[in-house]
Amino acid sequence: MKIALGVTGGVAAYKAAELVRRLQQEKLDVQVVMTRSAQEFITPLTFAALTGQKVITDMFSAGGTAAPANVESAIEHIAVAQRIDLLLVAPATADILGKFANGIAEDFLSTLYLATKAPVVVAPAMNVNMWDHAATQRNLAILRERGVHVVDPDEGYLACGMVGSGRLAATETIAKKVCDVLGLRHDFAGQTILVTAGPTCEDIDPVRFLTNRSSGKMGYALAEAANRRGARVILVSGPTDLKVPDGVDWVPVRSTEEMHHAVRERAANANVVIMAAAVSDYRPAAQHDQKLKRGEGSFTLELEPTSDILADLGREKRGQILVGFAAETNSLAENARGKLARKGADMIVANDVTQEGAGFDGDTNIVTMFLRDGREIPLAKMTKFEVANQILDRVLEIRKHSK
Image 1 (cartoon, rainbow, N blue to C red):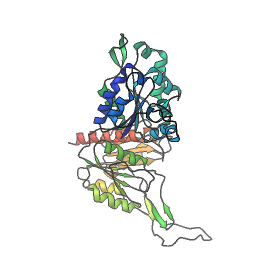
Image 2 (image 1 turned 180 degrees about the horizontal axis):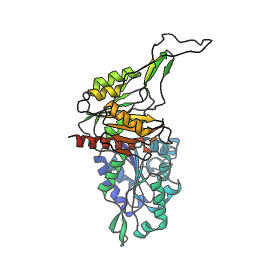
Image 3 (image 1 turned 120 degrees about the vertical axis):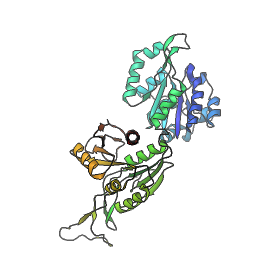
Image 4 (image 1 turned 180 degrees about the vertical axis):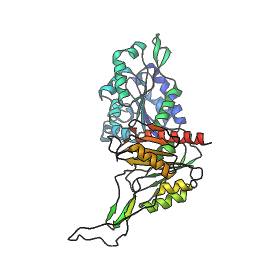
């Protein structure tokens, strides 16, 4: 995974070198971006030696050299913004916090912040009076409201001679926050998790088929999260346009019967099965070899039920934890509880797809987890990756209590 480490101008800038090493221990690829003020405290050469790659120091030149600006250097902030998994700024001065909060993009780092959709972590460091100032606290409040993760500074003796809050948080504290945000844990090491994702397609004729609006994003987020937490992940996926997460075993399928076969063939060797796919409940009773032509009158399509994959897994499971999903438009709790009882699952994750931020093809979700012990755990709107980690946390909890 690749992160950008923004280093800004403060005495604590020298601690960023130690932070690079700690992040590399987590097998993270670190791209350092330095402001001009940061270079007054530590040289780009230090970070280049530690990371083995160029350090970005200027908006329109490559790696701080005197080379003339070109198209590549002029749009590099966009390229970096698109390829990183997280932006970390440590130390983060009051100046950079103000730029981030107010949308000011006057150098590479502040422009990168506006251009990236990756999660952002800031670790402020400054004089205690600057930290306590109303303007700084307001900027921090704005950033937190936008979803920026803030690692509060420690208290103690500061470089200016004063005592109080403002000292850069410990390297280990910052690294832990980065790992938490990225979902980098090892609590599923040695386990196999089978995830289904996307829609299934049921052919009517060679050019028409029945399907649904599932994008597969929730299932792919689950596969990514489980992989980052150390599991061997098998992703059985219906047709989507999504990139398969690195390190995940991908099994592409099209129809419900293909998914049924692929899942049952692999479920016995999985510790956890998470059925996030939106499986078609019905298929055409007959498939036509030739394209159906338009007629003069109405056309009736006879449907028959498809295999109930989740129910079959519930009857056949031998020690696996089974998680199902329920996309509802009404009576969410009643329908989810009914599905939990009928299918033999350990948990049902339900969402009302009519809610803003919880429907198909979005990057966020709003779900409630229904457990066999009677608990209902509602989650606020969050990214699908965050939802995925919440689901995996509950899986660990179920396993602990089942021993």
